[in-house]
Length: 449
Image (cartoon, rainbow, N blue to C red):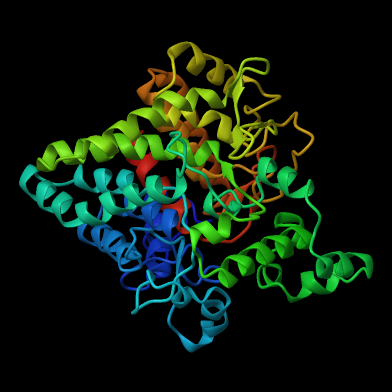
């Protein structure tokens, strides 16, 4: 990582923000930004939203383009896919693995995945709008309103089928935290497909690891276990066989979880949706408004009084999945919990044995049996999660905590570079290099400090 005294190619010193802009420039593919050039060649939903939040500080039009490029992948039923695939022949296998065209709602002009990702779209739209004069902001909001509204309506129509208030997710890839403990513990309770059990019995896991794209550039210790990732690909193939029809996918589905992080982000997105609607004087239907209110009300059902924290929940049984993760802090971002419960979460953030090690915030508390400081979403610190927590702390009035976490996040990036994620104990950079949302949110956090 280049510091303030390190010259660039032309001999001009670079500061942290300039270096971050260079990362985004190198990952720019014209209409969208890839998360990381070597490992992530496509466009991802919440990645682009975070990227646009950083870009808005120096190029509002390019930030808008990042969002418009996401909307080109929207399905006719309103679903926004988590991936829009690069159309190069080089990635034909990636597109073929999903075959989004099997569902009649998928777009004709681009290939996508068949599932979604955390709904950060409204946040990105509002943040970009904050950089515009009032008249331009209204025009911007109007241009994206139909797609944004359709996405929120789809989430309620397909992912809250019983109209209970919380949305369900059908794959950990939908929650962005791909191997987070609540989902992996749930996976461990189910029998693996016979072909995966055969690979495990025959000790062929090492061969699978060698064939994985991610382990060509990143040590296996920093990624998914191969058995886990094969199981998740198997679930994805089942979805494909069912043509991404939600009724068919939920029938004998391995996963049907009301994810804590996803629903916290959705609540904040609904708040932004209301604000956008007021700005452009667009009505929200009484039915949608009631469902949004209900989401905030029933969110408290994810609280466990015994352990004093929030958890994800099984959609069918309503049993809380009591495997702690950083998701328990994201109700701060949702902004709908009581001040008393917010204070309880902040105490967890202060504790060095839970979420307050040297380089917070770890994706799993330090005292958890799941904690592995280098293993993807089972321990490392992620700048995007820090960003969400900082935003929540600010709105709950914990200005000093927010400032301290912002400073520590920037210090971490300055120390270790624009890595995908970081060891929360040592600050060591992990995962992909030159990661876009790390760079983009570094810019945003720098502007806040």
